[in-house]
Amino acid sequence: MVARGSVHGVSALLDLGADLSWKNRRGDSVVCMAVQKNNIEMVKFLLREGADINGEVADDRTALYEAIRTGNRPIVELLLQKGVSISEKTGSYAEALHAAAACGDAAIVELILQWGAQINGHAADNRTALYEAIRAGNRTIVELLLRKGASTDAKAGPHHTALHAAVALNRVHIVESLLLSGSNINEQYESIGTALHMASRSGDEAMVKVLLRYGADLSLVNYRDENDLNALDIALFEWHQKVALLLVERGAAVTTTDLDRAATLDWVHVVRLMLSKSTFTLTHADASPLCQALMEARDADDAEVERIMVENWVWPTH
Image 1: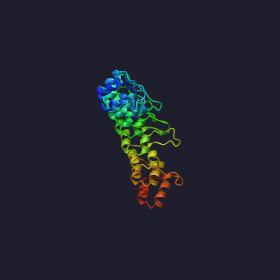
Image 2: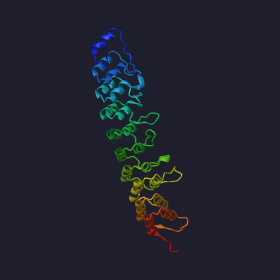
Image 3: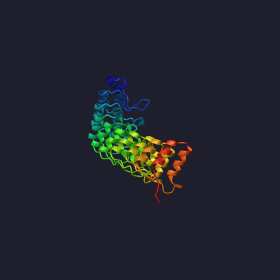
Image 4: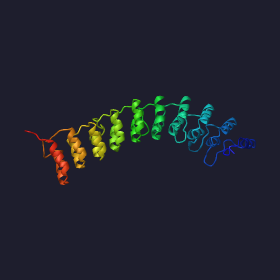
């Protein structure tokens, strides 16, 4: 009767002794079923009759979760007024605010915040409301949470900060929002490094462009990496030619090792740009990466790379 939406029918069943704690085969409570049907009058009736608003349900699909999931703000507000818990697990989320942030209804997020939800509360796995919004790719909710005081420095799920999370999840527009709100663009995280290191490693040219536009430091090395790699080194080692070209264009310092790597990969355009940006002096021909690159170019019969490198070497005069 609840699923059919008949308040009169449910009332008659209760008069005959029906149990308000009954659940269907999925484990949904009667209140949950009414919420799933967006039937606010049925919800009101069941609550007046004493249905448990915080009763245990299967998979933590509480009445509040169902209202958030379906985007039904009036029912969310009703449940809040009737004392529903906002700090309990809500569906697969740690709290109601996390569920609302993931589901993407700004009005419901604001409403839950008005009722006292902790904006920086997090689960054991560090999944904050901000992280859930980033994961969902919802820039509107991200910016709302930032305006309300969400921390960008706290761990975000498996990531060091919200910025690291946004880069890892390829949320370019959200990265911009985080940077405009004051996120530290050069924050280092263990072997992951900075946001720019992450974008270089994944070969995400659009992300690299955004990070450079907002002032990412090209010179920083991943200090937990035993090889001390900077963004250009990483792009070269991961074979991301477009990213390497972009980094050199934007002023990344080029070493002979970088040039050697680019020549080995037969990246003529990158080699040409590197040589136009830097002057290399060959002091020990038998050990120089430049010499090695030249030999590899000759072995590959790559006349273009060979010509460019020979023309741009500066040979010592003594």
